[in-house]
Length: 153
Image (cartoon, rainbow, N blue to C red):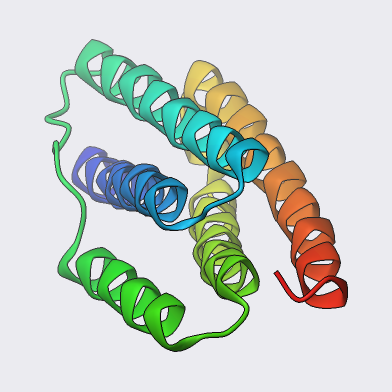
């Protein structure tokens, strides 16, 4: 992967990570259940850590990491707020939007990892570990969403 293309793709992952961090923070604000609020806030904190590690690796490669999310992420969070305000099952709605965002993140990581032979091994190991953790979060959110649906939360 040429250096410019690598920087662009890694910056796309950074944007996705910033969007996820803000999405989890927003979700933590709108849910009323203390344990779910805490878990969502922890997920947001993990995405902040992901961004810091990825940005550090990029700087080590003499690349310029971006430091903000996307307009699409802002719109997604706005939609989450509207959907939650109108929903009878607020936690289920929040979890549906978290699931959507995390599934998108896995897709973005997979796109970059399709070219892992062109990336430095240290970046590949970071991206694979982050993607695996995001996939675990997808699985957890699915189970939480199912629980919220069954209990009308």
